[in-house]
Image (cartoon, rainbow, N blue to C red):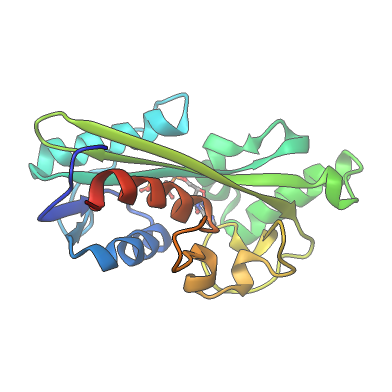
Length: 211
Ligand code: ITT
């Protein structure tokens, strides 16, 4: 059991797609949210060597400056045949090549250069690390992943980032072809959610939002 999150929380992300999902995930719990943009919070340098370290850097910075509990996500797409790249560098890759369509193109090109055509050579997973940090320094972290394959060409325009290129195991549609509810996939019976972020959030909710 972690510390209970009550009252207000800052969602410490500058990524609009993530912000939408983090708000949707929190919505049933009656916690009032403010975004980093609304509070004009800076973006701290993500110098960590793991997803959890980077999530903590973002949440600590927001909690210290806003003097409120802060909720951050650090995430990425890890492609098995590419040494789990872009991984921690997923946002940077898209920035460096001019956007997500181009970044998905780069991943496809690297897979083809390695002769990765069959689905089992195109395995990938999304990771989400979530951090909750309180102004008094208390910290809670949660991490989860969802496994699947990289498809070519990318399909769908829902979601954000690399969603059109990723088809989760057990589905014949990409995250880009799913509604937000399907991508979260949080079942009413409390069984496992679908997306990396929703899975990590389920653990967070169990520790810090219920009971
Ligand atoms: P913040 O640090 O402000 O939260 P960011 O975009 O820089 O925003 P990250 O450093 O965590 O976030 O980078 C994660 C990258 O992985 C980013 O490019 C996302 O678009 C991508 N990504 C993460 N989760 C995703 C998801 O559910 N669907 C598609 N792409 C995702």
